[in-house]
Length: 344
Image (tube, rainbow, N blue to C red; front, side):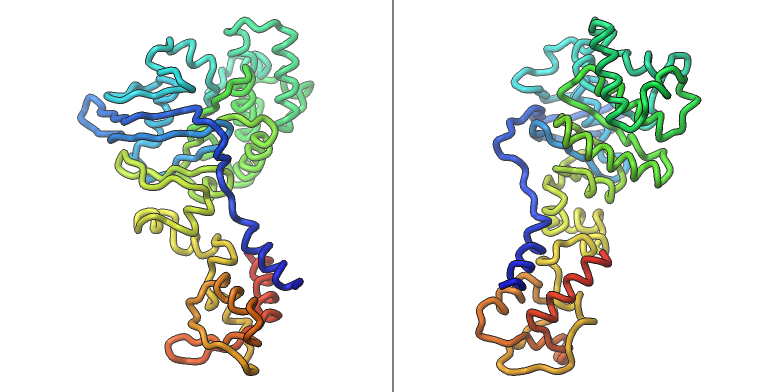
C-alpha cells in the first residue's frame, strides 16, 4: 500500500486546474488588429481571462502577443471587436482613467531618472489623489514585499540601483494604487539570469499574497511554464492553445505547440505518470519472476502502475523493438521514479 500511495502522490502532484468559480475579469470578443501598413497583428481573437490568475502569453516574434496585451489598457485599439473588463466595454472608458486602474510593467522599466524611488513609486496614487499617509504606508508595504528596505532605497534615484532592483521598483509602482489588473510586457528579459530567476520567484510569491489578475508577455518558454496559472500560445495573430502549464506539457494540441515548447522540454517536464517506461530503462532488472506481463517500453508509467496494482502479476517484462529490455516490479519502479525526480 505504501508503494501505491507514493505512486499516486507522484502522478497527482503536478495536476492543476483553474478555479472554475472565478469569473472572467477580461474578455476579448472577435478582436482583429490591422496596422496602417497592412500588418494583421490579430485575427478574430476571442478569449476570456479569469480573475486572480497569472496568465502568460507566449509565441514567436510578431505573433501578436504584445499587441494583445496593449489592447487591455488602450495603448492600442482594435480594428474590430470589443474588450470588456468585468461587464463594461473599455471603449466606453476614458483611456487615462482606465490606465490609472491598471498596473503596467515593461521591459525597459520606465522609471523617471530625475525622481527618487519614492516619487516614482507614488506616481499613480498621487494622480488618483490618495492621502500622503495612505500612499506612504502602501509603498513601505510593497517595498518590504519585494525585498527592498524602504529606509535604504526610497531616497535613492533609479541610476543608483541595479537592473534587478529597478525592475522591483517597477513592480512596486505598478502595484502601488492597488489595481485589479497588472500588465507585464517581457519585464525580466533584459536582466541577468540570476536576477531573472529571483524575480520569477518573487512574482509567484507576490501573486500568492496579493491575488491580482496578471497578464504577462514573455518569449521565454521556461519562464512561462514556471510562473503561469494559465498559458496562451499564439501564432500569426491567432490563439493556438490555452491551458495550464501541465496541460500544455502533457497534451499539446498540435505540432506547432509541441515544437514551440520543445520535445526535449516536454519530456523533461512531464509528470511522472505521463512519462514512458523506456525513460527509466537504466533501472530495469536483468532477472524476472513469473507471473509477469509483457509490455511495450512506450507504455506510460501510470499504465504500468495500474497493471501492478491489480495484484495478478509480480512485475512487467519490458520489450522494445522485439527485444527484452528488462523487468520491473513495484519496488524497482518506485526507486526509478525517486531517482529521476531527484535529477529533474
